[in-house]
Image (cartoon, rainbow, N blue to C red; front, side, top):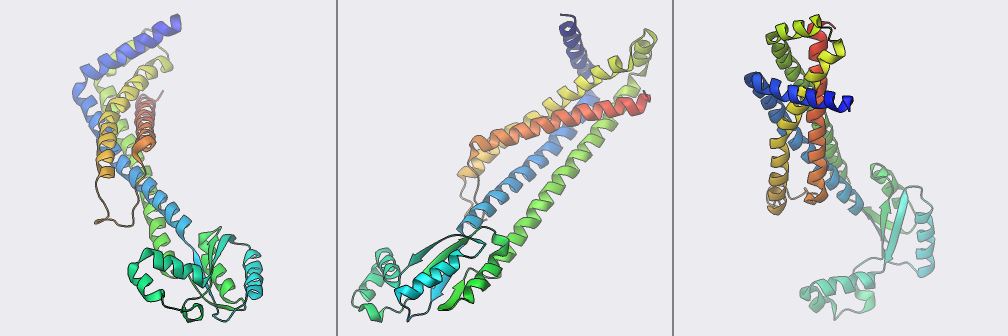
Length: 298
């Protein structure tokens, strides 16, 4: 019960302190709010870029075109050779007849043209469609397959795939650096703001020390104050994340960013909101602790 009373008293004192020093508290809350809004944007961008990269990676395939004059026995040999490669995850075989039927089912124009063709007149090639385990090694795997006997050519979007993943890596790295920098800046701003608060309350702190309050007892109310500042500062960013991301998800981004695929809002927005709340609370409490420790040298 004593611990509960102390907890309640510290919470009450923290709220009173925030109200008594409203201008300085508002400055801290504003710093947290603005920073967390930018952090939310960076997190949403980073997660969605990762999500898009994963989807694109799962859809990347090596198309292996076999030579036109090839029999079933040779196809089986090529299949075994492809299956023996280390980076091959899975593959399927499509004969030129199957490919022709797909074209005909997808387009009436193709159907009208190809219906009159005999089997030996179809200008298509038997094909293997290969998925790899590691997309970073897809070029090497494609080269290995291309060197196999009876393989005419391979195609996987050489050059474009590497450039695209390079761009994704840059965006991911930049977003993570931005988030880390913003958290440090927020901690610095809050720490300095609370230093000013402590200075304005130096007589109160001196009285606490004169009556025998320990260093920890002096620090704890300020930590609770930082905790509540972090929670209050996270309210607007969390609300904007919920409302803004749902609206963004409903909006058609295909004209602006045709490549980007957005994550479904639920449970994604709850995860981002949780991260923002944790960052706000952590930065508020740590900033308060450091400010008290450094300013009072206790």
